[in-house]
Image 1 (cartoon, rainbow, N blue to C red):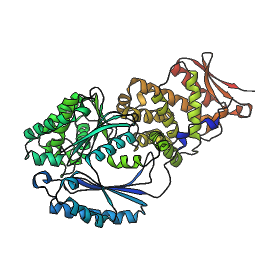
Image 2: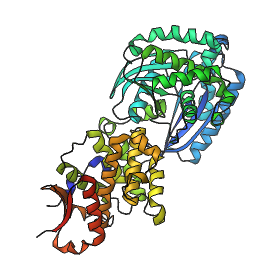
Image 3: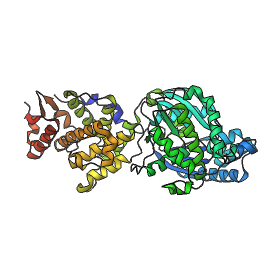
Amino acid sequence: MGLDRTALNEAALAQIEPGAPVAIIDIGSNSVRLVAYAGIGRAPTPLYNEKVLCGLGRNVLTTGRLNEEAVRRALQALARFRVLCDTMHVGQVFVLATAAARDAENGPAFLEAAQAACGHPIELLSGRREAELSAYGVISGFHAPDGVVGDLGGGSLELVDLRGSSVGSGVTMPLGGLALQDLSGGSLKKARKIAAEALKKAGPQLDTLKGRTFYAVGGTWRALARLHQAARDYRLHVMHGYAIEPNDELSFLQVVEQSDAATLAAVESVSEARRPLLAYGAVVLEEVIRSGRPREIAISATGVREGLLYEKLDAAARARDPLLIAAAELNRLRCRSPGHGPELQAWTDAFMASLSTPETADERRLRHAACLLADVGWRTHPDYRGEQSLNVIAHASFVGIDHPGRAYLAVAVFFRHEGVAPEKASPLLRQLAGPRLFEQARLLGAVLRVAFPVSVAMEGILPRTPLAMRDGAIVLTLPQDLRDLASDRLSNRLRGLGRLLGVEARIEIGT
């Protein structure tokens, strides 16, 4: 019996919502940044990203004022961003300002000039509002998040408890890199005392962190993670979802605090203007780890800006899966027959249901994403389709996925092209995926190797050719009008799947 195409996963068919581009200008204490997106959706695609490190928050806490040179640089950047938005035909521009403009005596005058420079109204965020948007940003970027969000800017640190899509109470403290450098007079020893004392006010957040995840948001913490990857020779240079074990992170942070930044591995990847703040960011993160005792630190590339876009979605759009939406968009753009991907989902659903081995909900969503991505390398030279597919998938700007999940997706589609011998896989990706996900990737790769000689990546065939475990054997059923699809090549692929599962495999012709 064929599969019901109307029952295909609707989320898998979802695409980024159409419409004019939108842009967010973020006037922070350290940087002024423009990010333009293709539209407002559950998995917004960045079109353009530019930042200028102006240092608006430098010395604000001791002088009470924004530095004149920093103001000049910020206004110049905002005027440039206005022209860039016009050039990109941006439909909506949202402008946010944070701690420096909030705390400075001349903040109101600066905001008036800034509004004239960028040509759009500016929302001055309170600390509570900034914490809320940071939490929304993590919700938008992680699958079922559970922990505490920490957004470290130049002027402040916001902490907020997060359970799924439920945002708890938040707190803001003057522990941003520039603020802490200012308050401590450049002394890391004093900065540590200031951070430890300030974090005592974050009991409601840090007391709940034990054994959960700390989501680290902000450029300084991302820079520290990049250096951590270099120190560990970690080759998947994707920041979002990079997870660090707290004890390992503590030892690394102490190295950062005790070293000249210029001597750190890969420090050239960090802008010179940010390097002096690395040690202060390390001090704050170390105190958070010691006080909160999290299970892991997860680096987030999504924060206030993405949180603002998420906030503007209705409840139905928020509930959609950003990984599946992004995978569906790649399927639409790069695969031969976009409808084939959802059919693969349903076809493999039926096959997995026939097995005795249970599949978790998260493993199922990863398999669905892999089905959508299974044909992204078809335009590549045949000798390089596996390698190209692996690189596209492993390095794609996905959210809603961790690094083990990325490794699974990349390896599963690689195996679809190259065969499922485990030694063919990248040792790094094999290690990242872990034993269970790696074997799941081999299984899906073997199933995909059966699917494509049957369907030739075209829709309408798989629903008529079910694959299932039946009476201890794997059976592929071909209808009478497709019986000539049976071939040595297809039989060999099917037997390969059978060997992987330790059972016989055969083709049957239906009536």
